[in-house]
Amino acid sequence: MGKKAVSGEKIADPAAHADRLGGGPYVLWRERDLWGDLAPHYTTLTRFGQAGGVSWYNNCGPTAVTNLLVMVRRRAGISGTLRGDQDLYARVARYGVRHLFYINARRGPFHGTSDLRAGTYLRRMFRRLAGVSPAITCRRATEANLRRSLDRGGLLYLVLRHHPAYRDHHLVGYGYTEVRSQTTGAVRTYLKVSDGHVPAPRYLDLAACRGTLWFYYEVLPPRG
Image (tube, rainbow, N blue to C red; front, side, top):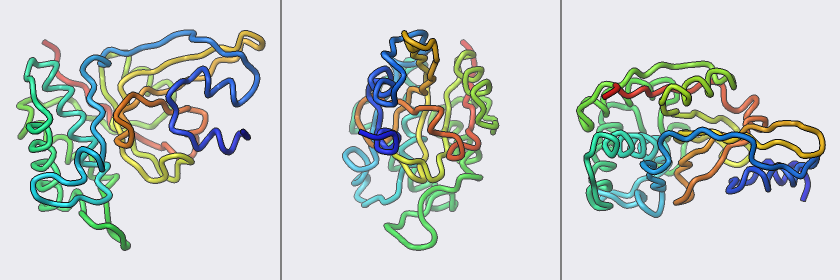
């Protein structure tokens, strides 16, 4: 498998992915995940393609917002069910449509969630549906910034453009993993994500995100 094919993967195992790129073998070096047990992995089609009596299209934004809301609600001790979380999603998506944060269309020049208005969308949904007001800040997607956000207990609302695996897509980051080559000492960094496509953790190779991940929204819930 060539490097181009590998770069288009939805990554389940960072070390195995790095091995296929060459220069390995790679082993786990370091990881950071303060949210893993709380992370849902709801998907745009299987879970939320039909919700609230509506068919939803290009709905990665409302799905990412819902995954973030569920994580913060779980940390606050608010348990839920799949049906309850589907109802939560329907409220998120409907609000997005009414206020033009999200356009529910299968195709056409205008569809999906606004990259630039996603921060406001998040703030409103957290106030209305989680009862908290996290600090939400738009940041440049440098490796240092991404690490800092996660190290301080934050979550990431990631905005991808023309990514080799995800194309134009919104998703949630909640940890990172570093793998190190046992032959060269080289280190590769992967963001741990709830990608809205697969009902399990997946990883973004930061090296493959250059030019496709320009900014993200840091979501820093209040402490306590």
